[in-house]
Each structure stands twice: as C-alpha cells, then as structure tokens.
Length: 405
Image (cartoon, rainbow, N blue to C red; front, top):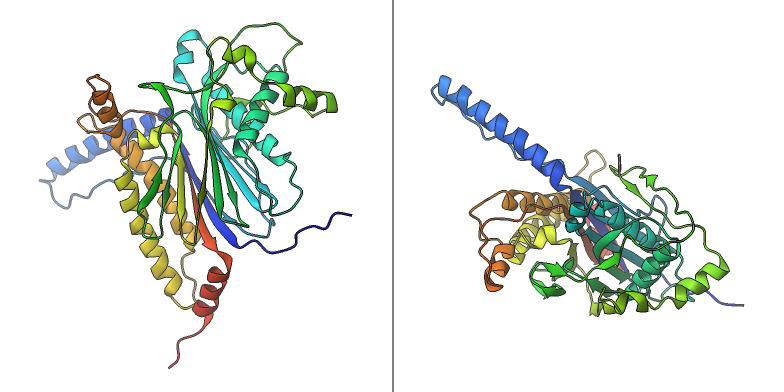
C-alpha cells in the first residue's frame, strides 16, 4: 500500500490572469478616440468649462483565483479567446501548472488561422498536466515534459490545427516554493521580489530578430479523418474554436511517449526538446509575471515594477486594516486582479503610441532595423503571487483582532 503525503503545502498563491485581443483593443481605441473628439467639440462649444478626462478602460478579461490546499471552487482552464494568444492553468496535487501560448500571425498570409493552433496547444497542455503521474502529493511536475506530451498528442490525434506557436509552461510547487519553467520562443517571464524589484528576467528564445522558436504542425500529410474543432465554453470564448484531446488509450499513450519529433528536427523545425528549462526558488510575497510578447514588447520591466509596487503597497495597507463584522474591506485578490488588468492596459496604452521608444523598437534598432512606437499585438499575462501559508494565517488572525480602546 502506498502512503500518501498528507502534509499541508507550505505555500499558497493568488493567480491573476488578464487577456485582450488586438482586435478588441483596436475596436475600443477607435471608439475611445471618437468619444474624446466628441467631448472636445462639446467643451469648445461650452468655452472649455469643467472638462473631465474620459477614462481609458479597454475591455480586458480578468480572472483571479486563490490557490491553496483546498480545491473547492477551483475550475481548471484550458484555453481563452485572446486573439492568437491563449492560456491555461491546472491544479496537480500540490502544484499549480500554468502557461501561455502565442500563435504566429504570419500563417494568416497562407489562409491558416494560428489562433486555433495556440488554443489547441494550451488545451492539450492542460490535459497533459492533468494526466501527469506523481507518486507523492509534494512531487513536482516537469513543465518541458508537459509541453512534450501535449505537442506529441496533438500530432497523434491528427487534428487540423495547422500553423505554429510559442509556449511558456510553468510549474509552481506549493510544497517547496520551487518554480520550474519551460520556455520555447518569446513568451517570457519576470520574477519580482517582495519589494517588487525584478530579480529574474527571462530572455527571449529567438533564431534571429522577430523569429522566435516555435512549435509547428505544417498543413501536409495524410491520415485518418481529423476531428472538427469545438467552440469554447466560458471565459469569453465566444466563436473561439480549438481542439481538445481525444480520450487516451494505452496504445496511444505509448505512441505519444515514443514521439521524438525527429521528422520535424530533420527539416529544421523546433520541438519541445529545444525548450529552455530553468528552476527558481521562490519565497513569501514573490510575484511571477508570465506573458506573451504583447506585454514585454511594449512595457519595459521597470514599468511593471512600478505598477506592482503601487498595487502591492495598497494591498499591504488593506490587509493591515482590522476586520470588523459590521463592515467589509476590499479583498486583496480583487486588488491583485486590478494589477493584472493595469499591466495589460499599460501594454495597450503603450502600443498605440507611434513615437514611443518601446522595448520592441529598441531591439529592432540593435538588429539593424528602423522602427518607432509600440507593437500592436494580443496581450496575455498571468501573475502568480506566492505566499507562505503560516504567514498568511498569522496576518489574518492579527487583522481579526479588534483594536483596543
């Protein structure tokens, strides 16, 4: 008989995800400009009296979840309608597996929708994570193996999700605080310390400028009749088509595990074996910022640091307020969701500025290209706020105490 590890995880987390497609952002910006112009015209007629700024609130989707020892109320997510971006997250014993994928837009010129590929990749990655065997609750999952099995399963199922995509898969162990990452391409991550200073900034994985490593299924080959894509459910997935894995069989599992992607490597395509694997030790109040290139092409790391500092200071003040049964105070996870929204909104704000010295423009200059302004793109980010359970519980007890008169 196998004895299960019943120890409580040392850590818990708050996971905040935010995403907006380039199309949704562009539609909003066009309407926003019209509103500003109409407001300006009205103010001129009124001699400019009492003019108020119109808030810039792009329709960014946000999801915030507490990740602790309880799984009550938790629902995994395998894909979102983020344009050509997608994301996923799965609970696996005492691990949180999450990641982002960015479909390569160049396939549109060949009449292929890369969004189906990226959403299918995250759906298969979520399934691969969920099906990962761990002997003990505290064992850690290998994110590169999850990427490998997901991509191999897509090939085995013969789904017509053609094109290519970058992917970043992360595994956060709530038992140890270890973060393992598998990065293929230019979807990257930053780790902020408790003072919201970046202590780890992952580098893009590029063959050359603006040509990231990517997983590819070319539109060739014969096989059994492929399945049809499904329409997504929930999480703003209206009209978002993608494929979920077929039920696994023992024979299928063996073929998936045996796939070494040699056929792709021989013709120069990237494969999961090329993903960069890294491991980091996290502590109380560290924050992981994982994102597609729509974020860090437009927002410098120091701007992310400033936004994080502003929100985390506010959260610290909120948590210091004693609880009172007659009153309610804002939830810290709501403010953390606001941080995710604000970072994504900053990316949209920056990429519509034509004279901005964006990170993408700076890298283009280094590569010998002339480019100014931001780079319009889909934006998808995932923030994981790591917290030590004992400290969270001690803080909760302290805030529950009424102040003495």
